[in-house]
Length: 421
Length: 135
Image (tube, rainbow over the protein chains, first blue to last red):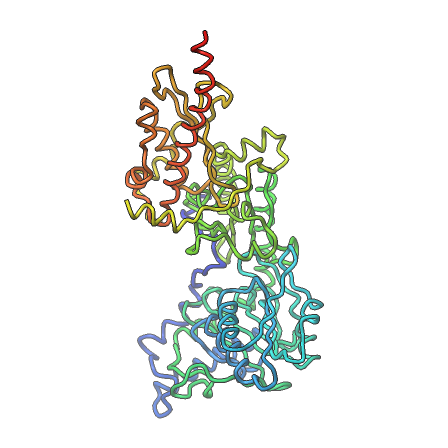
């Protein structure tokens, strides 16, 4: 079977909207277009009914009740609302927050902001697989700790945190526990009751739903979690998040959550097999490759792999028909290699040569065959070009290129030099 | 990525890939950059008696722009005199490849590699030259 190019293997960045989701959304643009907050006519009632159905769908996927779901514009907003909202609400109890170094920037930058406003942060260092343990969290807790925020699974390497253990610990110590489940939702089982989760962020566009819509789960009993309002306005979402609801988006999120949780087990197995097949193919045909992240406690769709002696951006250019991501500095706005890989101890050199393959619902075996074949060929071609690979082979392939360690040249300075010409 | 056709051509069909014997007296070798920075260039020139560069080879670990910049540099070096090559400027490479601002450092690295190769050759010639005169 022929494959359609380009192939999309960047599903941790975003996903294609499932046609079933789109179908559920369509009536809410031109027909049932009402404002869900309009209480006095059928247009509003129908919109409100659709929103409440979606709220049930999202709640069901988490083992929560509908009243505990607050719709937002996405996981970044959910993270902001959860962290700033809890920090502000409970500041009289204490001002210490625990998180980890490999969180998404939506969490890290929010924590940094709070640090500037008088809170104390502990950024736990994960192990070499990217895991933060419940013991580490326990040791970091002080009598000032009001919030623990740890992602359920990492977006770059797919490593899954022991959320249930950390949730139980937080419960026992009376500390609010927030998890950014943007990547984990609908990929691995999540249950807010069983896992002791008090706040949970999720997003529509990572689960084959639309962009620009997300949700925050906010526990209502044992304990009832209260959040300081971050978005003031018309008192929507029971005053927890003002702003006219994105009704088609919310409907899409609900449909995506329902489909995603119903198909999670079968889809997880399918993707896990395809991902492992890809990993084995690359490991079999290429030497000096390193898988980043946990070998088993990892999202079934994610493969983050470093090809030594090859730089990630050039590899992506060679396989331009395959859409992936890289931890290389050359692909980031900051010109720094991935901070996640750095935090788990991957050398800068290997971080530059890292590629993240993230498979999805529409990924086929044929696409994976194509990707494996072309990536293998591209890595070989680039290694023929690589002075590091040449050196490594001359030295018997011990993996270490014998070059003097030099500080990286200031790139901005060089840019200035060129401008001045 | 808004890369020019010229850059993509050098990236997809790199010129003068390979290595010269770094111990040969008429070969100059320049290695610049560092693996942890994401780019290392090795550029080599072979220079004849009259100071003309007869061959140039490169190997580069780095992004597409770094590979293209070193490929272009080797193309320009061939047939030039060492004096001409000394005047090669990174801005000329950047302009030729229409490098975006964040990739200017790739052209700087190529210029540095050329200079390092020339310096290596000159160092060797210094030694050989005296011996030649004695003969």
